[in-house]
Length: 157
Image 1 (spheres, rainbow, N blue to C red):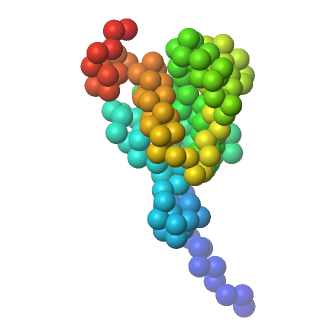
Image 2: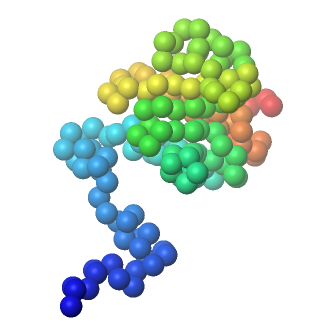
Image 3: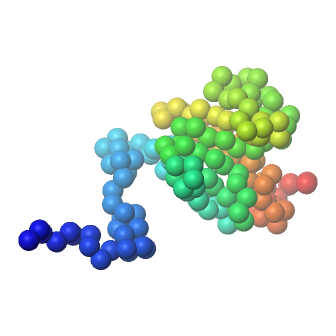
């Protein structure tokens, strides 16, 4: 007689809940180095934005997106070393022209102000300030006006 499987009977949300509670490599790395991973920093930043949510897209290999009312304002790699966000066309052109880590986003999104950005795992505090500004800008461009004004009360859209 073969031994019983410890996961037998766990289906659907019960199994998913067990997986969510399991330690992830990024959690272990953070504990060891005491430096937040890019994803932890990104999630903390997005958590401050009204009605923003992380949605992992299964069709894209569970890559995270960050959304407000079902509209994407950040696309991310699993470790948040590759980000895409929306800026005004003018600001996007300036960022792409002046930062070697930035380039127009693929799939034709670049012509609409979307920027793909390669963010080093050991990015400086100054770089994170810049990334924070870009993500907040992306949020305000995508979010409904009432939510965008909570982030930037001076918004004149």
